[in-house]
Image (tube, rainbow, N blue to C red):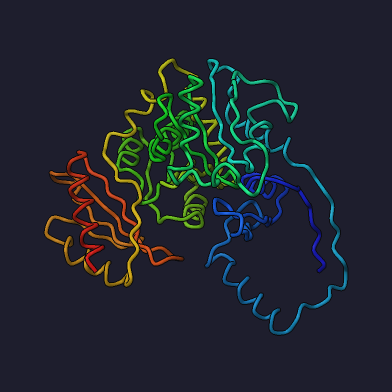
Length: 400
């Protein structure tokens, strides 16, 4: 149709972002992301890996598609050219240039690729398949064979059931850390040496502090983005370190826009998306994993001890409730909890906060964009208080 195409073949989503940034071209890939294979779709980005969202091009794509469906697709005066270019080696070298792992202590790392794209990228970045020198890492591979039928488990580490094999393997091999990637490998979850899942907020705090320290050392005041469901420990620890934490809505298009607009050095979400200014303001699960490996390998403590200070509060995790009438459920929650001493804001769903007085707690309720679900996240300074608030809110949500 008149467009010149550079075909980079199989890649992770952050591999697409790297190609878009390095080649200064818009990009598109076919992927089901973390969903089952039947949910294949397209991910798009503008030049330099900038997000395509409702207000940054997606609306125009919808309108243009409607016109083409109605009027037909015009024939281009000039046929575009297609050429192939393998970007995997350049991608691996670029990531290694951002995080130096050559001098860390030897680490044993179990990686669950879920028969998806991490099986393609991990050997290139953390191993020697791309021709780069060996790192002091012993990789124990789980399900590196590429298989879109996902014979072992879904490529969605947000579901705890899909982390069971990784947790068992970490304990069985006496590994220092386990890493689990989703289908398109743009998200990475970590498991500590005990087989316990590391909260994404702890990774946000750890990497945010590393990137902030680098900015401060260069004489700049760092800005770090965190979404509104991140642990309160994230902005508290970043502010104490001299960074400027900025709260954002959930979603990559919002985070990327905030990142670029504020020249933020880093951004993190509760869903294990991690964004880097040095990576074209885009997210990369692999780059986040490398930061964690660098932090772990630069000292002698196990991962559980290294991250303990970054998870000081009790969190519920995301709890989904199927509701027949989402607005009515939200209205019930507002009526029950919008009381004196509780701050309420509607940046993304409703967030209720009692964090400035005892007992300290907050929670957020958000409607799913695609399903009749209401999502609840609760955090409190004490586990018993978190459980009390969680149960009270769920009772109100589900009473209808």
